[in-house]
Length: 79
View 1 (cartoon, rainbow, N blue to C red):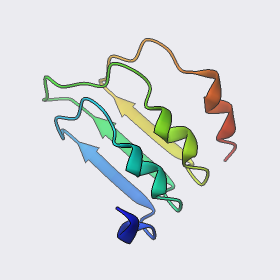
View 2 (view 1 turned 90 degrees about the vertical axis):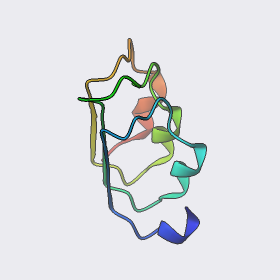
View 3 (view 1 turned 60 degrees about the vertical axis):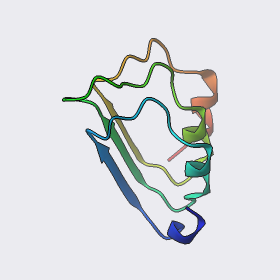
């Protein structure tokens, strides 16, 4: 994933994802992250803490997930 550090947008639509890898935090230029599960049985059950490491993140779309709450650490994202 470190070779993708220039990546600014990542769309994981219908990717059958139940968790995001910790390595995602290495995408330091990521500005948009979309994780949707419209057609998938696998959904995120918890807010992915790794997102709080994405300091350039401006848009976060967690569509059709089963996340009951958002942690206080989301405050680290100021953009």
